[in-house]
Length: 496
Image 1 (cartoon, rainbow, N blue to C red):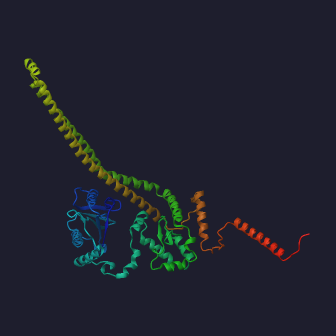
Image 2: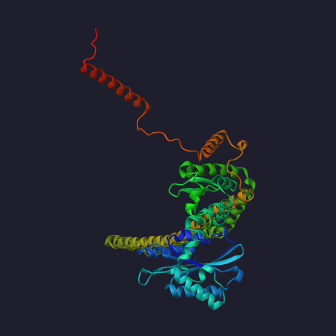
């Protein structure tokens, strides 16, 4: 098994990733504790709000547990045992956490996310040497449960661990893989194969083009390759077991300054890619987008019903309150009319001023009652706004998930397009290009043909040709004047 942990922020992006059902066969939120909200987006938002009271920016600790499928899946008890060991070693016991299970291509793995903020002390839990601790936890867990660890997890290999660093993916490479569907291992295998089958720089360039790659000049990385998806990669990091010095030696006839810039090569490839995307799988893509839209609608249906039911209940509650207040006012008015005297009693009330006093008393009572009723209406409206705000938050979370799944679908469509077409040379047939695209392709090929030709060295004077000719003529005129003066000084012949 391979545990991977990291400290991070961006709780909403993480929640969207964890709830992406398009990239996973099954998503199960097994546990969520330490929050009022009962969903990941709400819980992570609460934990982020708590972190604002501290200086901690990376307020989450995310752990992924990937068991070795060749040794069989882990039971839920084994997952919980590993999580408990991690909490004990990391000092995360009793911290708010979420446990999410994913099943992807039949492989189950687990994600655990803790809030690092200790609310009692309002400080973040300090996580020092967490990777070494995870290694120790994995070793102890494997020993107790009779499991075999990968070679890299069995012992500390010291400096040898840096030999395989190119096999690991950083965040940028993971995002590239997500956009293109081309894994880092597959790309390295193809480029390494092209290198080993080539005996010269020219043969290597040809082998790269046959596999859908272009050699280009990077801004700071020297040699780079542009894949058929338009992504840029450092060439030395793509060839297994070959040093940068060896690459420079073979590609000596093709120095970086003679290669096309990476951005121009990228623009060329992506323009060609757009043509393929428009021409292929248009109907199939539309069907899949429609199917995804139906899935989104089905998943959104409970929230839509909840919102409609909530709005209906809110309207009924407010109407009931207003009717109750109206009946109360009518009852008080009827009681007052019954108490009013008639005939002589009414006359005496007006003469003695009692009616005037009662009127002022009733006005004060009405004012107080109106204030109470308005506050009651405002209170119920505030409560309803809070309830609707929670529904709106859930709606925004769903929108983020839908956007992420739509992006995943586009990536999957690109994978299918290029998986069915073997890697070929990047330049497309002329009949498939417009006139402008043919002109760009011709310029690109001409630049490629110039690669490796010796550069003509011309003297750099720093001045224009016309200015240089003027200086030369002036120098010659000055020399003639000097020669004439020299002849006069020697007593030369005088003109008749």
